[in-house]
Amino acid sequence: MPHGPRRIDRAAQERALEDLIRALGLDPATEPDLVETPARVADFYAEAFSGLDQGEGPELKTFAHDGAGEVVVVRDLTFHSLCVHHFAPFFGRALVAYLPDRRLLGISGAARLLELYARRPQLQERLTRQIADHLERLVHPRGVAVVLEARHLCMEMRGPRSTGLVETRVVRGALAEPLHAASLLLAPAIERA
Image (cartoon, rainbow, N blue to C red; front, side, top):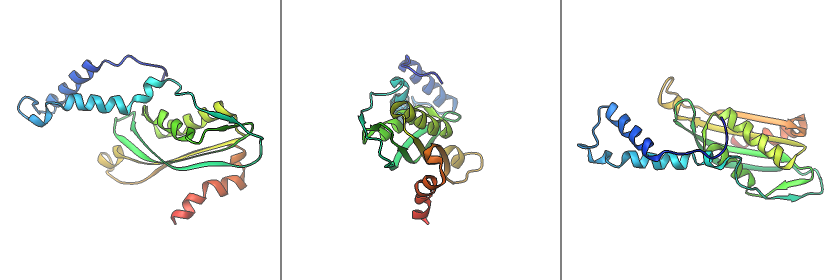
């Protein structure tokens, strides 16, 4: 999916949403609760897809680091996105970790990266990879790990109509080594058990 600012046609969105409402056999003219629905849904999409307007995202702060071996882990970040296949919500928690080399990411940077990429029509697998890729470009760590765990309403509300969590992981570099992987990535599962 190409990145960069897009021209959003708000009036076309509202017309399309009104057409959808009518196609469902509903009439905004006779059902007062629906009169403002096209505008409200367009507002929702403007917020839900705000990552489309940010290209590669905001300037994130990085700081010099002495290269010592501490792993930086930010866990239990929450996110919401819309799946690109059904425009149905998926949402959950994220863990973002990296083994710094010469640069550190500002403390809110992981949350900002997650927000940037989640606010686009998405696949969870791609979202996981985009966060890892961006972190690698930004601070060139010796290792990176991103784990997303999410509920998908397209699975819960249609098809199998089953609840469940989908987990995706990207683990690269030194964090893919067994010692780091076991301590970093298995800890959340052990804590929940």
